[in-house]
Image (cartoon, rainbow, N blue to C red; front, side, top):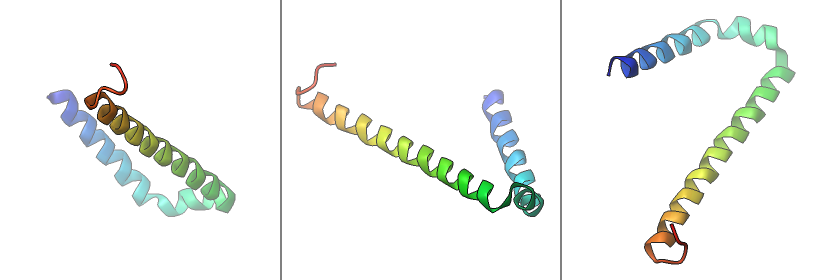
Length: 69
């Protein structure tokens, strides 16, 4: 339990630091870097969404016996 709490607090601290220093980070990365990061994050979010859809679909098909476990 302590490890989970430590991970959550660490994630919150890193997120807070990124938000506090967002303007200097954006100036340093530049518009092209921001565009590249946006595309990467979009790709990862869509990949996670497709994984959730695939997992749900296989669970439904397993329930009907169409796909063996």
